[in-house]
Amino acid sequence: MGQPVRDYLLTLCVTAAVTYLLTGPVRKFAIATGAMPEIRARDVHREPTPRLGGIAMFFGLCAGLLVADNLQNLNGVFELSNEPRALLSGAALIWLIGVLDDKFEIDALIKLGAQMIAAGVMVMQGLTILWIPVPGIGMVSLTSWQGTLLTVALVVITINAVNFVDGLDGLAAGMVCIAATAFFLYTYRLWYGYGIEAAAPATLFAVILMGMCVGFLPHNMHPARIFMGDSGSMLIGLVLSAGAISVTGQVDLDVLKVFEGSGRAATHAALPVFIPLLLPLTIIAIPFADLVLAVVRRAWNGQSPFAADRGHLHHRLLEIGHSHSRSVLIMYFWSALIAFGVVLYSVHSASMWILPVVVVLSAVGLVLLLLPRFTPRAPLWAQAFVPPRYRRRKRAAAGPDGSHEEIVPGPVPEPVGAQGMAAERTPVPAGVNGATALGARSRFSDRSKADSSR
Image (cartoon, rainbow, N blue to C red):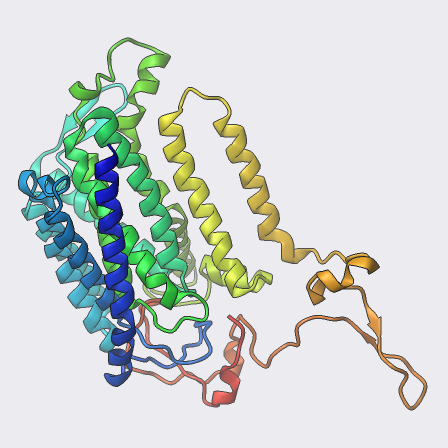
């Protein structure tokens, strides 16, 4: 089992290295071609930032597949299955649409149609859900149309969920990397623990997706030098959904022998079969919740579901008072808690300690989430070791009239805060669409007002 681990590690490193090394030249290319949209009212970055980072990520995907095809322990995936080729075909199509959208504004309905076509291309090449396990019934075979509709729905939902969450530096790439890591642990155990070769393509997809995100993150962490754009967010969303589709409809109940016995033992034994139905939803639980809330919010306000706004979860974290980096880390925390919690439960479902641990970690996450609502003052002896916002009040020197002005240490407010007040901005339409929304852009009429904390 050690040799496949080394092969996976080599594939991950090559994918990450190619993505990392190409991101710099891609950034220069994006600047040269003008793929640098103006600041929009809902954006949280200060300066126009080049997009098209998905170009480097796509070539990282190609490099990972090429290396895996030439490794002794991984080339069997390409010989026994057509799924890697199906993934590459669908990824190439969705990536091309994303590149055009990063440079030219493409209508949201056109992009939605392209996502469905990319999913259909994968279905035609065999990457589809053939059957689903149903608790209490067993494996239920799907008709061709049922499998196609379910596959397309999963691809479209995952792509848009990842696209919606791509609003802060490093957020989407980090969350997808966490999800891919959890998915790799699950599928690797399914393959080598249960001997199910059908889980091999999903394991490979997860490793390559991890490499794509790891290679891009150094360029995308705050302050970001380049954004992945729709060419990147839709690409990693499609790869993530492809792994889930690959493993969901390929698990053989006869190999797992999950329905031998009855009662509690049979239920616990069946969990590895039913987890694929839940894992794709849990690993995108945060982006999916953001997607649902955005659609409901916009419909309630009489807006189009594709209209852009500043009501996403990461925007609300900034409004609460979190910094840009802390908001990203909090989103990482919740994504990891949900994804790894589900994977851990699938492995040790009979253990009673998992639920209390998840509850305790959830409580810790809530405390961190609400921390800006409370500003406790540190004791005098700790004043030099805490951030200014937690220090005690000081009095300034006496003025000419002998009065004292009380000063509270803390960050100096800027003309435009993280919320990006619309009153300070003059919308000006621009023709380039980016990764964080689908609507038209707006810019600052006065560039001096663009300085705002993210």
